[in-house]
Length: 151
Image (cartoon, rainbow, N blue to C red; front, side, top):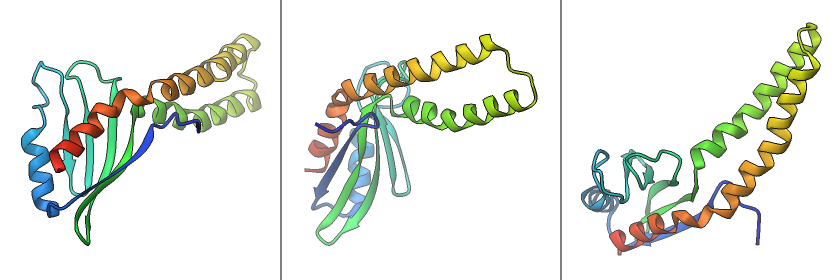
């Protein structure tokens, strides 16, 4: 099994034209402010983003691209646990490396600060990626929702 902290890939083909596929998804998804759990999200042009809860913004997510296919519509992308959190942590790594470099080069870094930063990124980082990999299948119901809606 491959290490997949950024979720698993999915691809769904449908015989519906692209406009009808988008309309079907919009009509069956839950309203963003509805208190019940269910697939909710947005479609902006060719992009789709779905998640479960109105209150839990760190839960399973699905990001994808809707495109026309010879036979109808194809939706492909990634689904996983807390995709936005893992992406933000990944983007923070080079930023923090630059900040640490600047702190050291200007003589502003203390040993305690470097130890804390090191612990956060050297211990916390692998834990974040491992947790996202372990819980990636939590987004499977979102993929099933799309398959059922586009069938």
